[in-house]
Image (cartoon, rainbow, N blue to C red):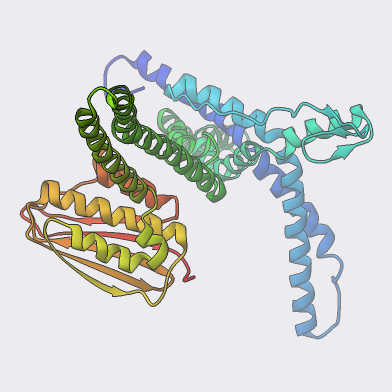
Length: 441
């Protein structure tokens, strides 16, 4: 809501009254934890510091004792704030979200941990989601406690209470305190000028002070941020989904290759042999010709099957390792390819396969799109990481767009915590590096 610079005095009065009201509400919503901390700290200091009062011990001993007493007070404050937080943070944060939605039109929806449904096991015990209990009643009680007091969102609400207590509270409480203090100076102390000045300052600040709520609410009143573990779980779930899609695509490719290639040739060969079987007595020459064609068809089918098998698990990769397999790729490439290797021995087989097919895809992209005449492949193993860098002198402009071969390579290496680095300015040259953490076998 924008405060008018000039105009109707009634509008100014309404803005001031609304600001005072909102400041008071925010003060009530954020004052609890600081009040508890102050009360426990004050009372604890009266008790703890009395333990060594009047002591005649040496200065070093008294200083050490005072430090211990201070630490005890800090522990008491933390314990008091923690207990109040468990009992009140959820309700206070939900109330703060409601006023944030009404005043600032900010939707800060959160979800709290539901109560785990208890289950009776075959042993007769009841499972509450964490441990086994002897009775259903105890299991339900423990399940409610787990949902209520071990919810990450509840603790994030507690952090909101702490942060708001040192940011929102001092600013929001200033206008009502100034007005109340000014009234006290006038009525009880007979100081009209300071009292009027305090009241005017409080009223002038009222339309603005409550607005400190927005930045703090946006940062701390929403859903709890994902922990490192949670982010890792979601990352692995995304990788698993990508790998599932890649496996489905690979199976479809194999099925298509068998159906359109070897399977069709084998069916045609069977039909030809059936015809030859009928003609062998009546027209032996024609039967021999048909059998010769069938033999050629069988050879073509065998070649296609071998090609398909090489695409699934190249024999040279299985028998001789990544370096020799990449050199074999270089010999079959339509452009001049040089291979430089600093890999002392074979790496893990899954990593070998992933890097091999990545290099094969990169060479295919060079042949199709780069218009290059020279390609250099560097295989290096350093710091427990295998890197394969493919450099060409082509047109450049390569990017891992959705659905492209480069995006497929990126998905493949992510399954091993690997990464794909692309440097491909327009006009070239293009440097693409696949880096995968692994160990030597």
